[in-house]
Amino acid sequence: MKTFKINETTGLAFNRKAATSSLTKAIADELYPELTNVRIAYPADGLKAFRTGWQSIIPKLDDPAVTLLLVRDPLDRFRSGMAQLGRMDVDKALDEIESGRASPHIDLQAKQLGKAKTKLYKFPNHLQELATEIGVSFPLPVINERNEGKPELTQAQTDRATILYTEDVTLFASINTAGQVYAGQRPKEPEAPLYVPPHVTPRQFRLALISIDIMPEQVTALLSQEPDEMKKAQSLTEWEYASQIDRNHPMVATLGAALGKDSDGVDQLFILAQTL
Image (tube, rainbow, N blue to C red; front, top):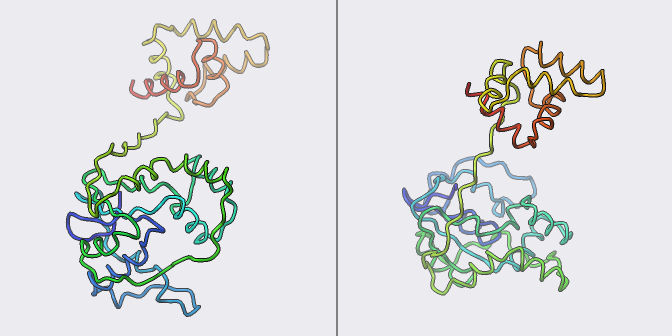
């Protein structure tokens, strides 16, 4: 997880809509004054001091030994995040959270928990303590504060959001002392997606079949059972003469069904074939 670098071992989690703009502006000004003259592109609307370009130039720290995480009340943060995004479509936003496609401004804060030690702070109660921990002055500059444009939630939407934010609700409620160490279950490492080769050689494919006790002549016999003469001719030609066996070719689907293998089973066959 990438964080804003405080020192060689400590990073501030990038938890949007929890004073991150104010904190990172202070970090840029006080911890990295050498960045003062770095040119940042801002829209020409006179709001340079309120733009968050400095967040891109502050040094980052990957998977620090200590992560500082400022946690905000989930529903309050959701409404503020929606205002920041200029959105009022609450149900659609909740759908996005449920499907895992939400903007970071409204996504779960629990995703920012570090792999190692995470020190928790409650927004806004512990802002001064967090500033002291980081080593910047307090009060912080007020940036991107949203008091208007926040959508009102119906009771049904509130109930649904509370369920979707269960982890955040529990996390927020658990913080009693500024800087207390998170003692819950660590976020799981995302599993690497299974790589299925798009194609293998006929030799590899045949050897994979033989390894599971399916002989080439059995495949020929199975494909010959296709009642449609055109499809049968196409499958047999592919089986006998193709220079490579494509995972998504209809012949493979036909053969997989004949062998009683679902899509995952065929994927495993191709994964095995690639090693032979």
